[in-house]
Image (spheres, helix red, strand yellow):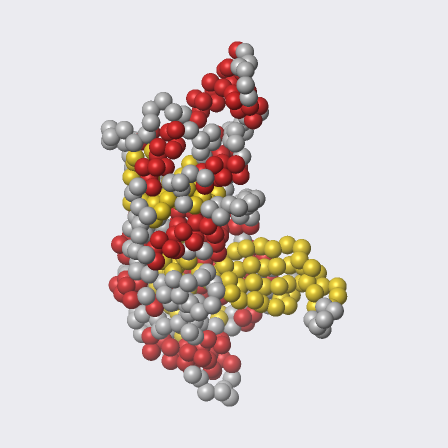
Length: 488
């Protein structure tokens, strides 16, 4: 099959906080960590998807994203890693795992997000995606995505090989999966194996029990630095040793194993070949330093921040609050986007028309770096801090969020607006191709529209005219001269 590798499951926001410990807290005998760096990354199914994309596969992720700043951050990180996200609504907060580390060792893990929320229904685009996949990896972290009835039905019906990475708090694998990949502790808990047997015997009995119960083609039990044990239709298990024993951070090694096996199966490998490739890749991952060194550089970018005194309508938090309130009331979320450099009457007309299409309007605003990348080093004329405040001051705008990428895809994936609006300069009714965001909106059942645009209004023309006036002779007053100076 030639479709993408599709990862299905719960995504978490992982944060590694690295620092030094040189003293104890004066009021309690605990170490004090002086933070030096903090790195965010997708966790859970999101990490498995990033690993698969880093190995050159075309990857789509079906996951649930909450209406909060954590969900916005996850969407940005996943987009930066080249993962196409098909989001499901998530009631509740984004789950977060924060690891406090010193000299490469974890001192404490702090979990946030509370009890799992209920994921929403998949769109028709998600169901078509699963039917066309070259392989499917279910990365279950026990937070509800793998329990979703419509998804389970689609997983059971797909003709693609399915790899199931289970969780003790999650559901049973759907019948007929090609490969399940629990670790030792998960096998003991899921299969309820009796204590006292040897390590290999326990893994073998547990794997055979799960294989029969789940009607799975094979079960590979990962054994840490000792490789994996594969049980399939034969009575004798296959032990796949690790190429070399490696000490290091094993966080994410199971995701690396499952992602590699899924990619191998998508390319026609036998299950035994896929497990051997997965053992080699997971071992190399741990030996190289684990997640701290394995993630691609774009996933380390920091979110755009804006100093906003009194700016309650600016930022991902503001957008999340507005969107959550409208969705809770059964309303329609509308979004639009652009640079909005030198806000003019054409912009305002588009924004006012967009707001009339629903119950809130969120503006996705290109950051300064994004505008410069699109329009050249002389732009923007107005920095994004000022542009966001001007937009937020308009009565038709409910929230503004700033994005740093060339396109608003990551922001839209998190916002999941019902309607995406562009001004009429993008189409004139003459059979032009669809807006570039149209395919993205279809992932969650949204749609794109064009609203009328005031002719003769253009930021580029305004800047050109201002610069021409500045060359030909200064006008009196601060207006145009001020614009000319700001563009330099």
